[in-house]
Length: 551
Figure 1 (cartoon, one colour):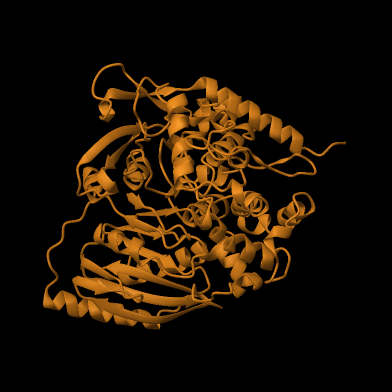
Figure 2: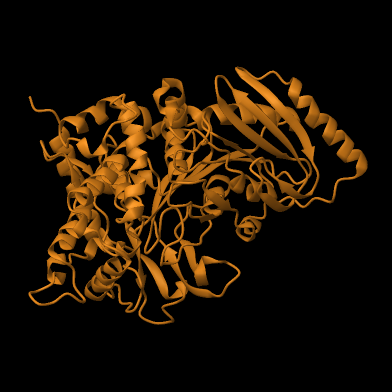
């Protein structure tokens, strides 16, 4: 599946299925156009679904949609869709979802798709390509409408729980019941794919509802959502206190160019507009500070402090405890730390204001980096953060999980999935770290994307098909040893290929073989990076020790 980036406000995730890759699995269904008799029968079966009894659920519409262009409820036109039965339903008290059921082209698989940001709408742009690829597919608004500009739903415990934990599960159970009734058989396999908030939803499924899906793809998972909110405040407060420290587009480009010049090429490839592994970069921004009488090609002292602040970990200022990792070197050009970053404050202002402080008018500038951190951990994190490391139930049922994360993500730290993955290894009972890695990679693999953005996009190769990879893993037992990512001109697949690179399962990274074009994936191979892996493990061990209560 190729995933296109949501808007900077955390809008609807847009997912385009990589049909060519799915063909490679030799699992597609080729169907002829439905006859008039087939259409009449399909229409009758579809309309009868309104009478289906589904627990705590009202089926509000079921209609047969003819093949061709389709205009969804939001007015978007989806071209050349196959004939399908559209079912709309509501789970009490307020969770709306839709299921689209192919009448002729069903590949006997179900695909649930995720949301972005605060959601509040159905992800039609993800459902349409899934339907075209033969899937029965479903999406939900997560229990509230995005037309609620005040985000009052956050104050409703049931709606907060649906958005933060249960909405995909509630949708999935009912969508499968509807699907099974329509086709008179259950799907052979079920998959889920989502990014950002959808990536968090993916981890909710793996951790709390492991029986819902056979395969899960989690892109740029906002799984530590409450801490992401604090990370937004971390930089927003810095800029509010020192507006002169803001970094505009030119400043960020200067910093990015300098970082690339200082740290690029260590993988044997010079000239890449991204770092292959930002963990190996230790550039001191102070070197870029303007000297007396100089104002061009440098940063002011306040701008240097802002950059250092962004690279640094977010920490509890009372205890020093790690809250959230800093942003990676090489991501500077994508930072949103001017007017755009201030706009992001609306997210923690709404979520923390209502769910933590019970005050819709709460002033985010007042956030205290000791007492208020503890309040977030107590009142919000347990409700919305799927960061438990015990994935044993998902593993035991044969589930497979692929997680991806761009190193140049402008909205959340690229290091977070590595921290989580390392904790999964360290907390695996009775195993050394290396043996735990072998065990965990049997069902869960993390792929870091050099130069990759949030969910998709970015300056590096960013178009790849993780859904095809997880399908091959689930259905054929072929674990993904790499995924080839392609960079198209302007990130449009119809344009020329700029370069391709292999994405490697952590802790491996792509290494140049020393010969061949550096623009082609075949000139690279995945190599173990045991040095950085050991450092990642040591850092997480130290954090875990600090978190342990003292006697």
